[in-house]
Image (cartoon, rainbow, N blue to C red; front, side):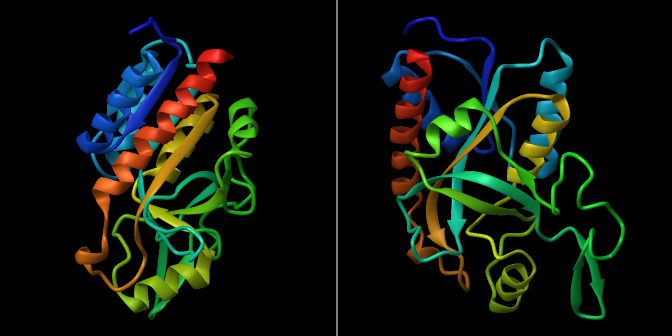
Length: 222
């Protein structure tokens, strides 16, 4: 494998996602730092904070993994990139009605890194890859949505297209550290009342590997 770029970090939550990325790095002959953080926002945030505090700010941080889809155009096996992300279930339960931190006046929706309550992706590599992969609105949750009331609540509050458990934490840490970031997700399931028989995680990991190989080959060319 050729020497890669030690200023590029790829962060994944689960070892299975890490395995897909390792295969992509080998296929692209491009080595870079891989962080397997653990599932959930706290693990992702802590791992990135430790890494950012240990040296110079990386030139690019890629968050790679799988996701659920709220939107019919994006089905298992599709790969997307996040154009924006939000903390979808962080807020207040107001007698059965959900209020986001912003609607509850607990946070300013336009104080960096937020704009309109969302963390928006931008930069050279986002602009480069947005033509090849659909750019979507992402929702980050602490508990995956698997029942109609929860799904309806998230849809009503944010109207997202995909859902993950780490994306907004990843984006927040990168933005606050001044690091350019890119979030790449392969769809493993539709967001609907939970039915694991309809999930296809092996397909999502295969497509994640293919997409990351393509992305690393493109970065390698400059």
